[in-house]
Image (cartoon, rainbow, N blue to C red; front, side, top):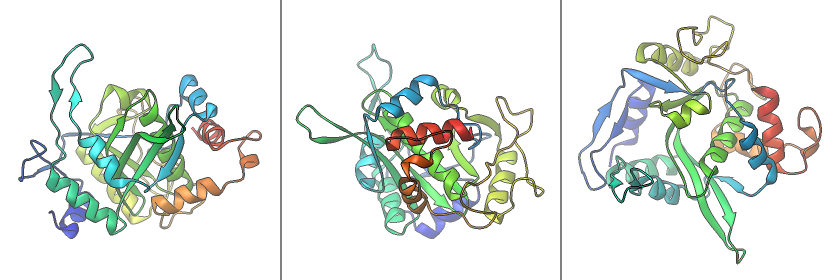
Length: 272
């Protein structure tokens, strides 16, 4: 198992571990030349995803099934829809044990998406996990067993981070999936500046580093103004998630919302 102090030092330095396979006992440390982040004020909520949220087909929780989410993220995945080949996993058993320990210590968190089956039994159909510290959340992996489940998890994550005062959502590597949701890619040097800024408590507009025009698809800034916290420490994700659930359904911007999903959709529409 990776010592938690070493693992957190790596994240605070812009580095993260990977493995070659599920059973590989060795790890290697990654510092990408190009880094992907999802600006919290630049999340792209499509009309179809907003409809999915409003329909309330899913129940969303935080830290209710961390190990199960990691297991699902580590499971082999089909390389192409028309192929029987499966890709391996960079989430080795050693890495999983290390993050489960971080979760026990309150530094790694998960968002779970559940759906009731035909018999009314609740099943885990999507989710994500990552590491949180200061005003930073480093997303590690996500999975989806039904359409839109991982996107719904990400919607709740973005809303909770905004509400709790976070300013940096790290996605590690760019993918078409993340790009469609508003993620942008930048050199590692610029990412490290944003990371240092988020750890120092500098507020947007107070000498903050911005995502510049040279970062494809970027908005006006990398950091969102907090809805509930000032320039100081952000709420840990579980507390921010609880604060999100505690919002009265009639407090949604622009009108009332009759369900948590509708509240999230209106929250993201108003603040994106």
